[in-house]
Length: 96
Image (cartoon, rainbow, N blue to C red):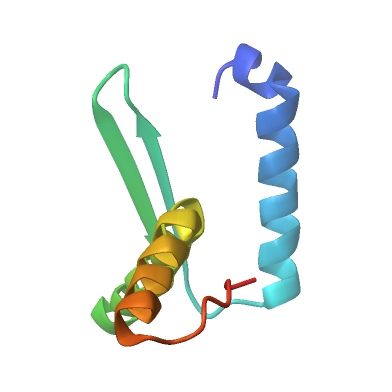
């Protein structure tokens, strides 16, 4: 890490919170991933991870991704449900 990166308060706070969270969790295995779009590279490090552990981690990340997609499209999803309800003759109750 460069001196400039250590000066990045947002990054420093994120890393500090992340490390505290790791110690609070008392993990059996850890993975870290970092991406540098400018250089077109990514770096992944693993501590004590086997194939199954990596697969479980991927499952958790994919679950986060799916939730982000649903939440960012909630209005579209709600409208699709309302249209289906209209076609089926059901009430127009909005999802809240």
